[in-house]
Image 1 (cartoon, one colour):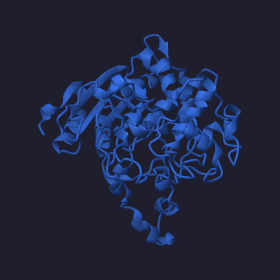
Image 2 (image 1 turned 120 degrees about the vertical axis):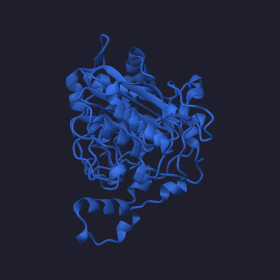
Image 3 (image 1 turned 180 degrees about the horizontal axis):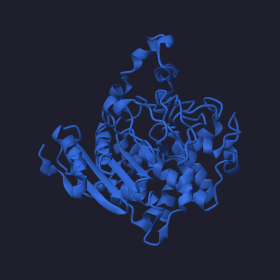
Image 4 (image 1 turned 60 degrees about the vertical axis):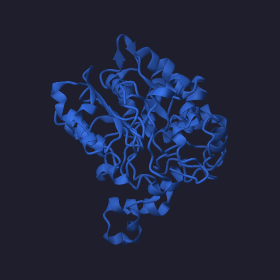
Length: 407
């Protein structure tokens, strides 16, 4: 591919970011992608390139939106932080204080903070994931509020890949009366002109990039399976955690697939129009970079305030740092819904780079968005091709490496 496939703006100071982004296309690693960086209130990078579809007939445009999977969780966390800021939500209260039906079958003492930092023991469905019923919110809520947790709430960290969306989303609905998608649109996105939605309208579908997932068979193949046969006494702590995670099988529960489910479900209208605040947000890199840029520079823009600066400091304070029984025993760190840069596993491109005062989230498709409170920075990289596990965050990590040689 030629460099001319890249469009948009890049401040000359950030040329290394442009070069890294261009390389991902020259190497034919990415199909379509966008990257944006807001630095101290200025959008210094807004680049896009490639194609929206596998056949490479529809070019990626500035307003192309794409499913960001779990990068959505950072947007949901921002809604939670705003509710805290408004005095409407106390995360130290039990979930049942806001959602009485939840307090049963071993979940009676679960705190809201347990949901937000993935310590609720509800990282999957005990009876299996309901298939192709994404728009039936009440069905998911009824299942989750009745089931028992996989372990005692608060006792350990296990990433709630999908269930986070319904669990946290129902708390938002009980507190505010609106869904997360409605709340974000009305309270943050519309006032700040941020092009990001949880639950698309019909009018958005034509500009939505096709998501190119690995097959279920490809996703099921883990290059780490061999470690289950290695004796514990020769493994360092991190690899012992990895072994325990693989043997426990929590990853397969949290990221459950089913042969009855259409492998292309993420490109269906039902998935795109549903509200799943853990996994199906759609937007542009520019929109997420702007959001995190605002949060990283005082939480206000053009006389509109999302929250007080001390609230984002509270929301990004580390609460849980693994080992994560779902995410291969890694030391991934969570605050109140945000992934934060505290302790980070050294697992190469299997993990996104988060360090120092970064806060945000990454998605299983390779997307990453974060803010940096020390640098006054907002960053987002979005793409439509999912890569194998060991290269999942390759492009984003190369972009972040380039960025932090500059700022």
